Length: 145
Image (cartoon, rainbow, N blue to C red; front, side, top):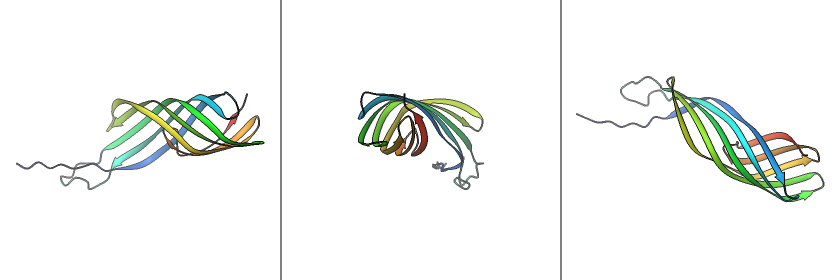
């Protein structure tokens, strides 16, 4: 009797980008504390030919919801232009469908924004270079109260 072990390699077949909602309370022009919530997901299949025994490809859908408090530091501010970095850690809920069978998973959500750029006074446009549950390249608009 022989035992064989193989590692399934998945390839992403479709991706649903992150949709985020955030609220930040600004203590002053440099520091703010906030909370962010995001949802995203993707579909994947086992790459064909990964198993010598000819198992049929497995399909998997993954959907995520993340909620995390975030700390932002505006390290440069000039008129309407602001540069910032941001970090947060919180909770992630994953709903996974593997060949139609649903399972629930929980974990740690995190986000680190290396560089964020925002421009405006009341209506502000922004772009971020980041890593984590809220996305890697983020563009959008926010309203300041």
